[in-house]
Length: 472
Image 1 (spheres, rainbow, N blue to C red):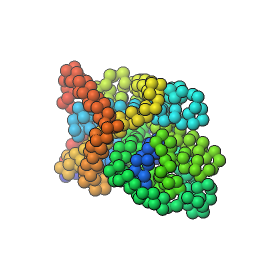
Image 2: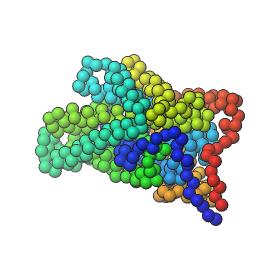
Image 3: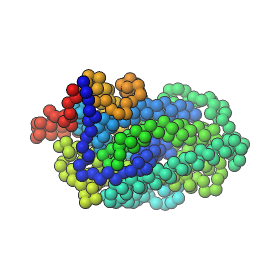
């Protein structure tokens, strides 16, 4: 039996305007978001130093997910990959459901990031209402995404550069405080802070495990590199490199940064609603340090919102290509961007502005829980598609990928079990359980939509994309 590599045709109409430098930074930026900069404060309050272990554990699972996605991407790189692979290996309904749910995830994440950005601006300008700041940022980023994919990539490159440089600087300063004892925190900074205040698990293992839902939100967007596949200049080279650097990014930016911070400042001083990084610099006493960190976390929020606008437009176009969304979403502007899809997505993100007006103190918590549930569904579809792809390769129906996942289908099964466990934690927690009700309502709405689509386009339920070459 012989086999040939099956590749997809270039994404019709898109400009391959994302170079290696930009794809690498998009991948790095996806691992550094507002979930780390802001939500980590609440999680430290719940779990203490054991939060470091939760980030490390979740990081291993995220690596399994990304290597599964990487194997699929090198088998057939396409924009809208999650929906396409679900459609191919699980059937048309799952492609439809995954595409719309990933769109929902980014719309809701965009609301969360706008909310976080407004909170950060309040650090300097407390008199400005949150909703005003959120609206201004929404309009500015909307304009950037309409111009060109190159401008999006360039902006995301510099957003990520700011985050990476700042995090490395924070780690270096923290290590300096621990080593040389300088600054106001020098007398109390010590590695023993990780266990001497009621132990490494100060509130019990159960309380630590309950933070996993918030930890998983922090990792949302790592899969964004898959959406860039159709607009990357050389996906066969840039995507594996971006995915293989994930472990050191997680180890440095999450596990490393939190370890240093919790050594410098005892965990009991962190509270919900305050960035642990801002708090740490305030304790260290570096002039203007807290303000600088606040600017960095503002950058992180805007970066994630920028990515959300990018991905939602592409996902709506994928759905339209498969007749699972109105055909108008298929249109590209003169700058080769899915302008109509981006516009509609931004209008829905505007709901976040309304939430900041109505319930500014609860807006962030509401939207992050929904985004996490939608993200878990997307990750599950990647993993299940990977398992089915591996079965097809073993049976000789499809060619092997040039970038096989270590552990094969076994690592995907482990990740599936972990994500189901986190879903159980969400159901157990009364504060986050509401997101499952929202997702149930979303599933009903999509089910009704699918029924209508089948009645109007009967063949939509019988086809699988793409028409693959036979291997034999």
